[in-house]
Length: 193
Image (cartoon, rainbow, N blue to C red; front, side, top):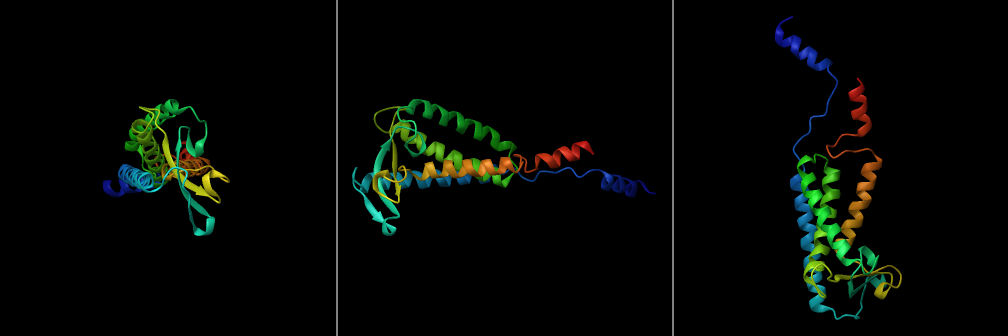
């Protein structure tokens, strides 16, 4: 058998090892930038047009626009921990940006893009809004099923992105999908062969 044919034959007998495509860094960063832009623009519009305590009823009462300042986490959880959440947002952003170079999974790129955009959006409020650096109140303005968070806590686009990213990340992890796009059990089977 000629050398080229023998090499091709040996290569086809080798176990299939995933060859990652291009990193999904650009997708992650574009999605994060889109979430951040939507969050910042929506907050600027709300602050400029809705007075604190004012409720604007939309969709027959399914959604209300209001203006509240949240010094806690997403959905007004853990009020008074603003500095802690600011520092957590900085750490999350740094870890995601460092991970981005090794990211080949589209699902994980979407997940981390949502979380990064949301974390930076709320971090900007904590840095630049009153009462001061790392303690600023995040602008929340979406209230569902009732005004002023009567049914569900008031939230914003950044909060929604973080929660959606967290849910998607949990689904990907439960399915065993790694950052490189492979499944953990498939990789273990390939290593065992």
